[in-house]
Image 1 (tube, helix red, strand yellow):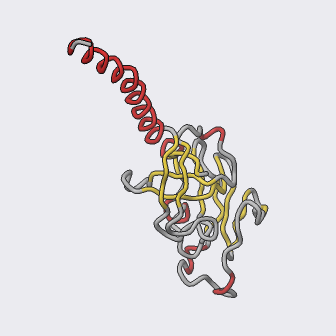
Image 2: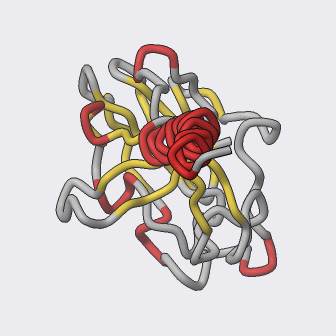
Image 3: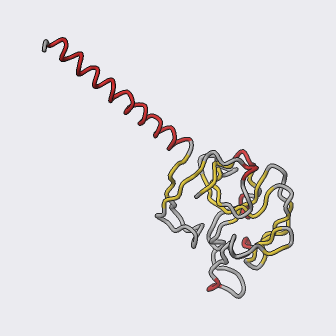
Length: 176
């Protein structure tokens, strides 16, 4: 076999194997950064559901109209678009929400523990240690095209009690 035929054969093999491999790598990178993105939890805001060090995945194709009360989402902070917050949807546009004595209410009904884990009661009976009065939130109507999120760890979490309602365009995706 001549050198030119041998080098042509190597080029053909590289093309047959290399091109699909390169395309696969590019597709995985696009999928990972724009569709399903891994995220490491760095705080205890969502304990007991997620703990610091846990890895969760963000579905960036979740549309706000498909999200349900109780879904956990990743949002950009309305005050600093470079900061992100994870929270559980307590209310969507038009819902009345309230947090009082560590109990979350949606449309004047306490939310169920299946959707919203009950905070650790060690610091009761008066007020939780971390948030004090901010654990309470007067009744409000969530504006249209917005959501109200709450942390599972209501003593230490940052959520709509401090951030206010979150506009739908700040929703990055649903956590699973």
